[in-house]
Image (tube, rainbow, N blue to C red; front, side, top):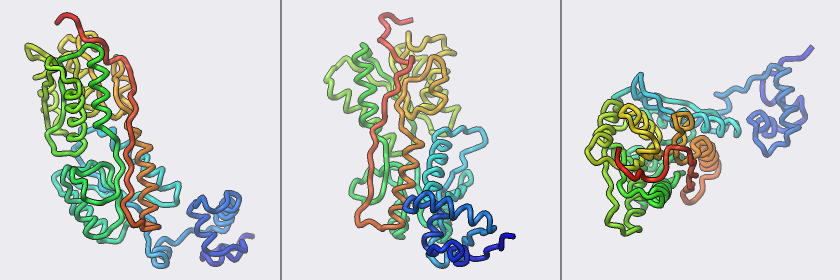
Length: 347
């Protein structure tokens, strides 16, 4: 009959291994040989050993958790980006033996206050911050506290030192313009958001820079904006652009949900994509492949980015590097059927 093992020390003694080796094996650390990890896990299961998280926290000073504040936007909002990001972050953490803790910020409540509670309660060893504003009070607070964090995105202030990973939206929007310009388009539309988010600023700047490089006075750009999480305002803004007397022949949307709205409203208006109107998005969310005729977009590798952020944060927690860790990833064009040559005549 197997004797129940109560402590990590007893489990280690039964395997003739050090406590450190057993602890790391149970956490899934890759530094421990696979055969050893399997042997330790099997012995722990047979002995009925369950790690004591509270005791581990007292010994190491770490909780083994990484925090993420999840804002609640409303019952009807579908947020494909956040679903992909949370999945990738969880995968990245679990592969290193860490866990993700989600803290929700209710509709109308400050994310900073929830983040402050996560940090000051000691429940997390570090946090991940998403959707960075041009000036972001969350990052200022975390840096002032000296608390480990990685931002998914950047501030406009390049002198503010912090850890971040971002996708190069400026390059992508320049590439989108060049591709459409070479297909004969000269009248462009941009569907964007009204919030002061850095990714909005960078993508719009990338589009403006590409237009300027061509030096073609025949190029025109119409811009409509709407609050990011206001679906009615989004539809109204798109229709202002589509139903005008001189609508663009190509529309670039700040992200895929906006581009899909453009395609839906274009279909309602009797416009054919891409015969009458070319549409390009950004993110390559799952729905972009299935919305007829298939949305041309840029793959921001959301899930992989989140995995890399997990790796970065755990490195920062363990090693406390002397300078900020940063990484800029170039998204990949996913060419589907929603873009084509500029129409020769107006419908």
